[in-house]
Amino acid sequence: MKKILVALTVLGTMTTLPAFANLQLAQQKNCMSCHTVDKKLVGPAFKDVAAKYKGGNEAALVQKVMKGGSGVWGPVPMPANNISEADAKTLVKWVLSQK
Image 1: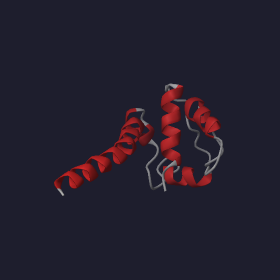
Image 2: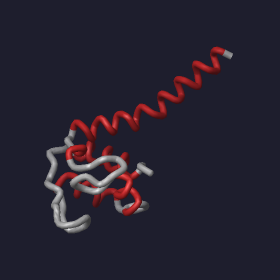
Image 3: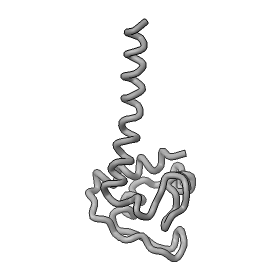
Image 4: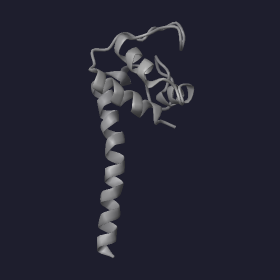
């Protein structure tokens, strides 16, 4: 019984680590200065972005994260970000997974 509980605990930790790690990446890259997971701040909530772009073009969103954009969510532009394409892909996948 203890082995089963340990295995379930390890599996549970493994499934939450990527989500936490991507939140950490969003914090490190200053995304959280303008966004939150569940409510509008300066920019849209990540949950709203996920809903709007469900099944959308991830590559275009990666470019938007890297180069910035304007007009989609209102008059406040999103500035370009100093971020690698790999990190931008990780963040876009994470943002699109928000519900």
